Length: 412
Image 1 (cartoon, rainbow, N blue to C red):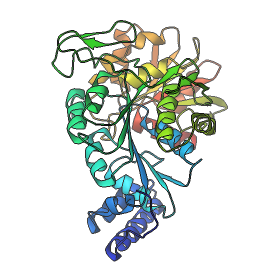
Image 2: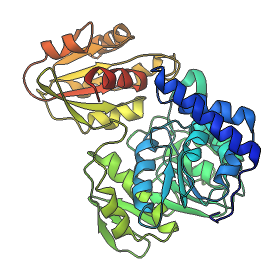
Image 3: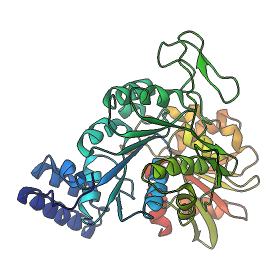
Image 4: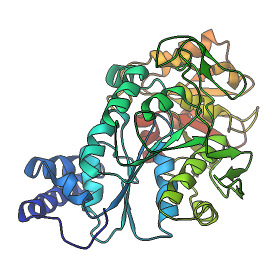
């Protein structure tokens, strides 16, 4: 919890200094931000450093398969209305990256931390959060993170009895199952476009019934809880029934859902919905996501989509045909090396768009598009794809490392 005493021992201060030095050396060598390697060095010198750094902060943890970087940013903007915030805004969301982020600020009141799904329970133990936001769970990086039911079970066990207020998506059965072990849950009706990971009951394995927006298991009675916050069109409904307009520059329904969960989190810290939502309007892009950049005299909108749920949401917000679309897929360690998820994506939603395929695993994607009866062209690189694309703004959709490659190429 927040306070004024210095929680850092001499050993911890040495660890912070060493971590910052290593991170600076990494940046100077052109090897990225250095936050991960810096955090690893710091934690090696003081394994309790993350807990020490979080000791004087009111901490929010944000975890999900999709939307956690954006939601972390929205919550951070909202809480700045109540005091200084430190956050891992660039998305380094494992313990080393989180440690680096918290070491970078000594005067913050709030710590708003994005956490990789696999590490949530451990980071929660270290940081003693006041609030935990759980947005969704769907298949992602199956070679690393295992299947969604196991992740939900890990969350459920790891968060059992937590003192934190848990803000959880009532529309995702896996999230509800995970959050139900917590004594203090605020349920948010944020929606769930991707449902293919939640057709069987996480409690008993029975078949889930889904009438309209509701869901329940006919066999064991596990069902959707009644939400106290909800997304309704372009408004957030709060627990008192008041409707607050959502002010966002970020596109799509998914970001309105992120804003709804963020408003619920902000309210835990005493920031009113109107103030929180107005502050969220300042966010134009998140670590390059949604940026419109000029490249080779063309406008390119950069969109990140890492898994089937993310691609489905992204397809819903791109400009209609005949807008050209460039798709880029890699399968490096940060993406997950298993590309079988491509077969879970409904690429028929791109019918009518001129499609251009690039990336390390462009041929894997080309096979999937061929089966989906899409017209596409495989290109060597972004430059060639842009040259071949017909006039108009180009939508560029890429998974994680492919997105970082594109940002470097366009100088973003």
